[in-house]
Length: 179
Image 1 (tube, rainbow, N blue to C red):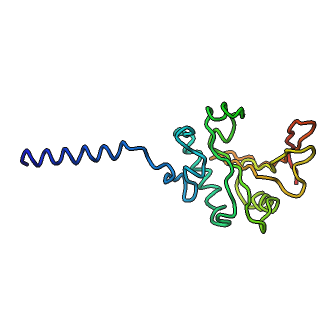
Image 2: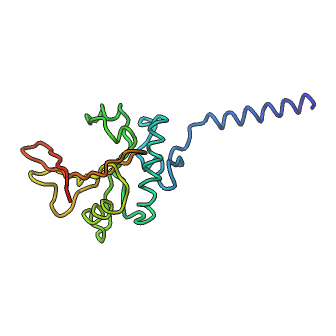
Image 3: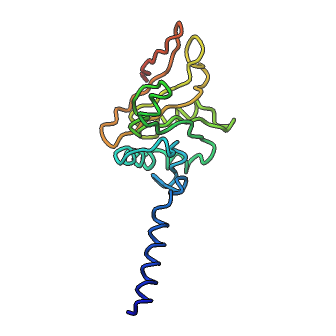
């Protein structure tokens, strides 16, 4: 190999390293077939660590991919991953969203009300916890339909429990649903 060829190879290597060190297009990162970095609410300031990424992969492959394949864009992810730092900034507690095991979803299709989506998931999907959510006014969270549905899924030991939010004197109360 001549000196010029060696220099050309080095230049190619340098160019390749520049490409590798560029910021990644985060919206193209997939946790599963349909759960992207962007859909999971991840960003440059809200990054999951390795453990959280694995949990998001489980949530994606074990729940969201099937949901998306059944309902497509009719179901929207409202909230998914939140870093501890983001939770502190928002004044939110650290919990399953921080672990990468939970998402809040809602139907954006009038022909698929959230109460029907809740019932369908409750009876047909794996989950650790499902919550009929959105208590903003006194009394039970809209008796007809939740504003959103909270779902969590872990790799092991899923409890398969369901809750319904209730607001009483400005305090949110969560009651387990027995069926």
